[in-house]
Length: 348
Length: 98
Image (cartoon, rainbow over all chains, first blue to last red; front, side):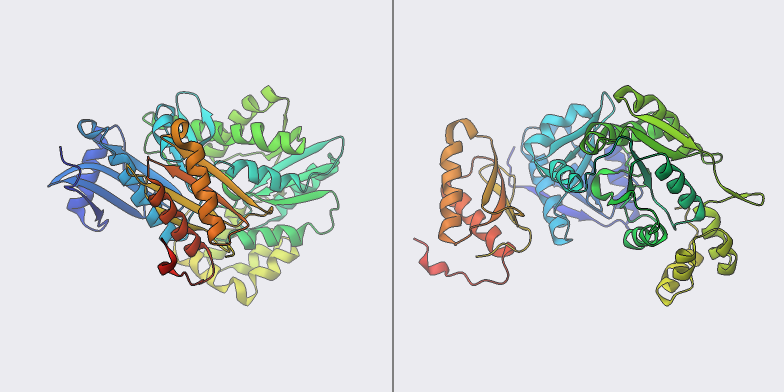
């Protein structure tokens, strides 16, 4: 087999026929094409598709090579192509979620293991010291105390419910570390979410705010294309995220308690919380669930606030958010965000 | 030359190497080398990288190299290109190459 006649070709994601071809190929390898891919490449031997891979943000995904064509360096060609495409897009720190059995292949392609859920998923990154650097960064904000706790929040946007949880957790701790989910899958950009928490918690002296950057994985970006048992997706995601928390983040800051908001509605968050109560105590981290704060018959939630915004009733949010958040919502800066919420209906 | 952003050059195809250079928050050069011929040529590859950086007056940076059996001249070329991409519009006198 000649190496030269393999051609790389960008798949047009608008072209149904090309996409179907990729999907059928992935299906043969027990994989799916995730709906959020932004860029897909195919490697062809003449007309025949022999490998494919995709990009979504800083994650490489949906990678497969035809069994008959393995050992010819096609994976190297494919992943090199994807890395260059990412570089053009300004993404140099890259991640792969893969089955643990693919470790060696991706290791040889320059990826390093961050964490693993045995038999289910491994998260890898293309920087040998990526997570180490992140841990060094958060350690700079290490503060001593007897009772050190953590909360992880998205705050889309920051409500009185979040504030209630933070105040309660801060009261019961010497130091409270707050990690803000940093993925841009929410209506409110990460920097805005962070700022609103910062402004709304100025009166608390024992909290430390952190940008959750690349190592707090939200379910919104967790890829599922390689997981067969679909009902286990939520569990696997939770296990991976909690593994990173309990093995890297908690020890770095001496965290012994994690506070979470009680989840009466969303089954995904409920499953996540259940797994957390199994996972964290194994490493000596206590999980404390705080009931929701109510206003009248409504449990306060960010989704309720977004619903009022969507319905054009920004005024009504005043009862549910701190003054600082309300000031933001009625500012010029919030206009494009509000417009976007009103335009489309997504959940996050 | 000063490294001000992430620069990358090369591929992971056989006989090539992919080189990434980024600013170092600490001072000095830090090299992470991964090579399919590490045992035989690891030290030689490291010295080619170090020499190339010295010739370009790069004093600080984190260099990641994933080598798939590239010859010295290929490694040198990839390092040079990555440095140029990572520096701020510096000029490079190609003629001075031997």
